[in-house]
Length: 181
Image 1 (cartoon, rainbow, N blue to C red):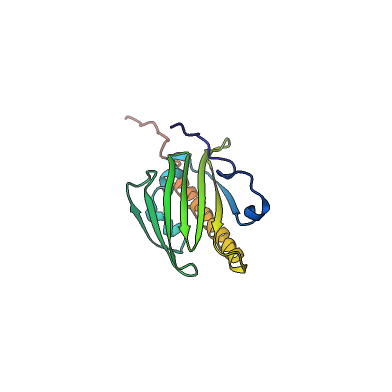
Image 2: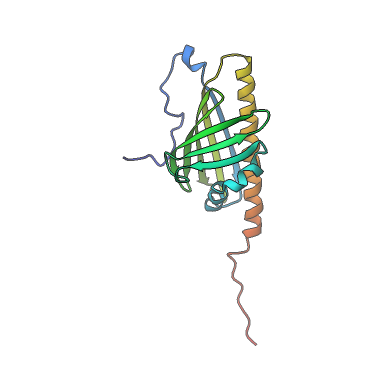
């Protein structure tokens, strides 16, 4: 199989008529970090840090080989969600992209995350999520707003941690000449 090195721009959905497309929500978000792409990926792939990025995460566990398509992440999420997210990895191309399908509370979500080296230095980390399912009601719009808030908080906290580690590592590559007496 040949895989594109870039994620699909709009997901894998064809153009849909309004009666279907009105049931699909899309969330997009991007952050810029001073961390190199390899460092950003390293921090992203460290699941022990994820509760630092989102205080709703209680328990995160792998089912299958970590970071391998077909493996699953189960994430227990506390109030106000109170659910377990079942996440199936579909694509994992370190340090470029990752994609998965989430199932939680009647919703199905396709999500892609991209790590792009930024010309000015650092990394642009972007994500998009397409959400289907759930009841078409006022609760659905509240759920989508909550999802947007969680995504923004997660990625803002992730960026802050990347920047913090990048600052502490910035002098590691500098080699000072030694003096001999």
